[in-house]
Length: 399
Image (tube, rainbow, N blue to C red; front, side):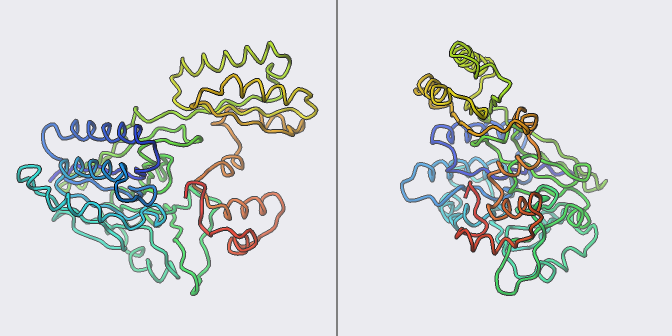
């Protein structure tokens, strides 16, 4: 028997503007329509974070979320939602109760099988397809809670989850057992791959990433709404031939995702030489934006140490781009000469440390913990860091 399924994660309804949200839903609608030309998909898996935040009554985002779920229900025989990060999901899948109940009438008798998975569980999704669901949960002891599951070699055809895989977050180390505070577990790609004959597919990390020759993957978010995620957005089409025990997947690129690009200007650039060069740079920025069809542009100026016209430069560019809401300016003072070779790079070529610092998906205390170890050789627990800075543990800039 051959099964076709779709895995998508981190849709984050509520993160984009109303207009961009609508456009994104129409993209998914068209994608599903194209995939279902001959027949419905066998299943669709949502890998967590369908929502971005708590939505309230009469919010247009609720209408859009329901519309999107109707398209999903109409496109597959079975739908499973793997619960994601609680601060995003906010226990609001109840908004789909009515549309799920009315679905057969709206779609002229089409059947559906819809479930939200909130706890670690397995299921024979079909009579010859065994899957494991790993929603984001907070536990005292990872080995105690997941131990039996992680010891079952090649038990599952697929593992669908939401959470932290260490290879994507090398600076986040597995926490020691804590019988006082529950924590989100940190898995390794190897231990997940060990229990799975087919593919391991997770949500949570917004950048499409693959490990162990593609056996373990983050699909990445479906859309783009922040800087620093220039990588392709999209989802996975999955195919399983149960008779031959063959598994295949292909990444479907969302070519309609908004583009967020950063330009960086440092001490070598002519923009700091004269007012004429400022004007040329401004024109060049606009030409590049138009040519590359950039939806949102961030321009970073690393102002050299001792540069005397910093105020003039900042005022010039603020005035030049004041009416362009899709262009964001950032001025960094104190450009250090002996680090100039590290600073003057394209955004995609930033050092590993810089990528960690700029990644909005990484908790603040983990960033500080990483830099203390690397720069100061100080090993301070993330709990202690959160306590000293009076920040909520696990909070990210996207939270």
